[in-house]
Length: 299
Image (cartoon, rainbow, N blue to C red; front, side, top):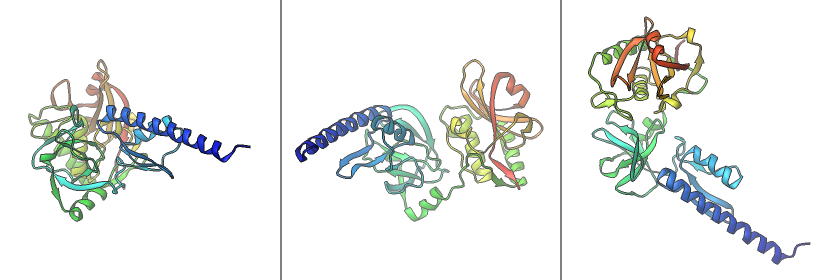
């Protein structure tokens, strides 16, 4: 039978091991994302929050336990919001405070973004857009606003739901068709990570902005996330307003296009460098069809 001192020694060993694992986990995540998750070891166990759901899965792999703590990526988690704000001009959101790849851009027309509970690093703050995209924004460009004005716009957005369609009107479908065709006639550059019709836009930002403007539906920022929204449909079922997910045949780039009327579609084309209108058949000569989703449906 173990003595009290033996039990105490085993407990200290477990706590020391857990603390070492936590420190190693935090260092790895800081290298990965640019900031360490805020985790502390208390008598009741590990406390704090994680930044993304991917971090939650990695945490479970390292420590072998389910995680109950909050995840900043979840839009419903407001506990760590320290400020709300907008920008006056298009501003890049970076994957890390030291630079790195472009995660997205924040534009004045966007819903308010929220600043999360990290101090500024390299002159940047960690923010989350209403579509749940997270990244680092220049602290100088973030203009704070009243929480009572911002909170409803952020939390009450009608977000695309996986495996379900949201209601849209026939009129909104026709308006999207007309607006998309008009954009294809303009000289709008393709910019990876861009979200502006003035300075440049990419394929997933095009669908995101058109769906919010005409359907009041907020899609995720990136094409890989958009392909999981709504209801899966067959290629033979394609109709106005559906999304086609594809990959470039030679480069394997993930790509999103919006189906229009008369067998045509619109997409921000990386190889052509602009928003492009073409038939579905011509599009699929250059892209490998990977699936189609219906986000909105007339009911």
